[in-house]
Length: 351
Image (cartoon, rainbow, N blue to C red; front, side):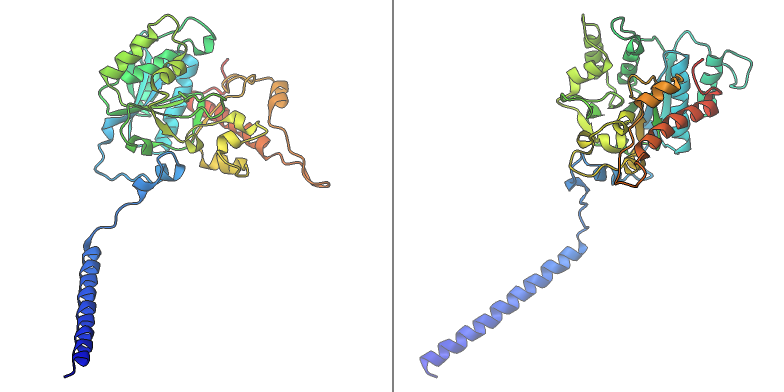
């Protein structure tokens, strides 16, 4: 055989062997990949998006007695409001416990249908009908500023509920449209709160606070509460946790009613997305009443006040009816709160 012919045949055989080896390796790799479980893509999703929270999965192995929704009551009006939150949790079939903190001087009726003071019967209803665990507490007050907020420190007692791994404090001047059990499954953090998106300065909202109770965090909160001028509960939480808390999306979890009165919606939407009030309400689980100077919804506002401050209808093209959908949604929310109050507490408005 000539040298050139020999080397040509040798290189050809080498190429064949190389091809066979590479093919065999590819088959081995593909076979191994077939048996490796597919990795979840949920962890790659930013935790501050709505999609990531709605995708949180939990199985039947979760011990739901480790988690609780917390309501705090400082007077008869807020007792009724808190009962409405418990009613919503009950109807939406939450799996977590429910706690109601109430002034230790109040008596609890033996039965919610008994002949007893209204507060006593409503506390019994919280216990018997809504399976709430009643926790008597000393109301923590702040003597300065608006009387509306003077007892709001009481919500900070959630940090001391160390019998639970996580508790969620919800303001009761709100409508809870669905349970928010999925938030209990968020990554561990001492505190999680949504942004107060309606404010100009960076600030977190205390309308919904997810807490991992501990003596360490409670002592931090208590120490700040006892300083000369700590501000309100929202100020305390922001001082301690604004720069370190886990952020809960305000979309879905903290919509305020004044958003329907706003001329622009970039702060809520976070983008140039077109505003759709019906869609915003449909995706919202927690709607908080905030429409100053319109009073809170358990106070019956004069019709003139409602008309003056209700969302304005938007003009359409000539010949078309104005767009009043935001106004109708806003009025419906107030009506819904009133109807729910009548059904749960037996009175639509504070007398």
